[in-house]
Length: 109
Image (cartoon, rainbow, N blue to C red; front, side, top):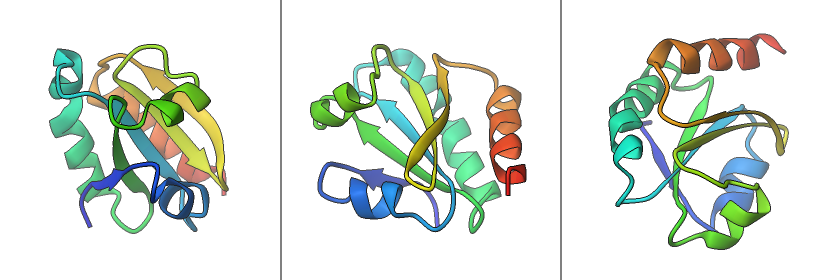
């Protein structure tokens, strides 16, 4: 399945109406910490395929979505369940920290 590219055209359908939880990586091409976590995000997309949808959203091209979800610095990972933000991680963090958030999200039933 891999990482989905989210934007204002597909955000409603792919993220808010998703049957499974979604992790959205808010990033930009010029952001060095974003590039640092990109391989982690891609790895986790493969690891959790079918149980978690993983999307990347370019904040420069989708500023209104970044504003709507109060993304003040990037990278920011937002975790959605049933169309609602249920958790977030701000900044480049270790893979294990992201895994813990995902596992917690998936265990919430």
